[in-house]
Length: 409
Ligand code: AMP
Ligand code: MG
Image (cartoon, rainbow, N blue to C red; front, side, top):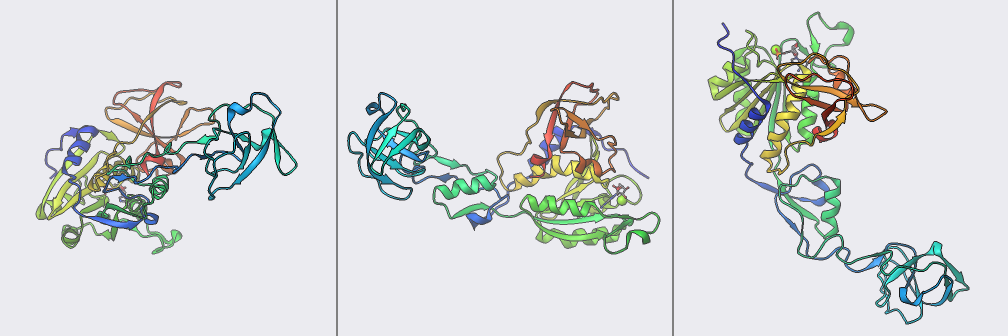
């Protein structure tokens, strides 16, 4: 009944082909800078001013002319007081200005002595107990941002720090890529929604639907608008109906389960009856079966049903695909080399993504059960070791680690 198996293909080839289909979506949105966390910038942000706008103090203390303090213990009159938000007068020769963090440096001053190195002598004078270096504790105008500089480029994914930086150049609204509209459904007659049946009443052969929960959250984190269609029964008719309903109003239809070549796997014929579908055997573990196609204007991606396979193929393939739809510039996660504090004696033909976590002494520890059904590995772990095909690992070997902090962002 099952035809010839789809050929194995490498993850890199699969990703390249997937991304070749991911033409950035047309349309942007203008949002308050408060509301753009996680979104992708659709314009270059050019600064109309320099930041900081003028030289200012990095310390609470006294602004001086460094050349006037040749020795420790020099006493100077205090000629003015400059707080943050106030204006400074030029510094009278032979005097010091009381100054606070963020306050403008008086013209003529070229150093700030921190107050811990000074001793007030009454109200009007100060003893400087340490010889200052010219320029010390002064933040220079424009040292953060030059006027006319691009502070954030189009295609940049915006996070809290970028929101702050945009605000620092006076941007209260930003143009971002529009949200991809994603229809999500799970397949599998064995699936039961948590809450629908109490754990002690679960029938033999049934399991709770876990994929629906993490896939929905992963999509939200990537800025998607999600239509959650729940569970679609394992029948060709129901699958066709769900796809037909989803296609017109969505950029992507994402499913989990039903992409193997078993008799209950209806995704393939259903998508093919309405559009086109390639079934890929990706040479990774976990995660082998993966489907890409289209139904009308909508992209179609079918993930494997095993929870860890679903999770891993999402972060490695769907995540960059969705970021590319939004025009994001950086799609690939950074891997860092770290020592393995475990042995992995059995090499595999496929490239493996092992669930690991940082140990106390800087090495990586391995979750003992690497089965594609064991979701515990993904919460116990804090990232994946990207292990090449045919490679064994010995304690102390350097391995490529990709953190969940990056893959789930
Ligand atoms: P499938 O890809 O449909 O053959 O499913 C492979 C395995 O993953 C089976 O053991 C399914 O019961 C399980 N599975 C499929 N979908 C889900 C889901 N949404 N939540 C939890 N397990 C699932
Ligand atoms: Mg199934």
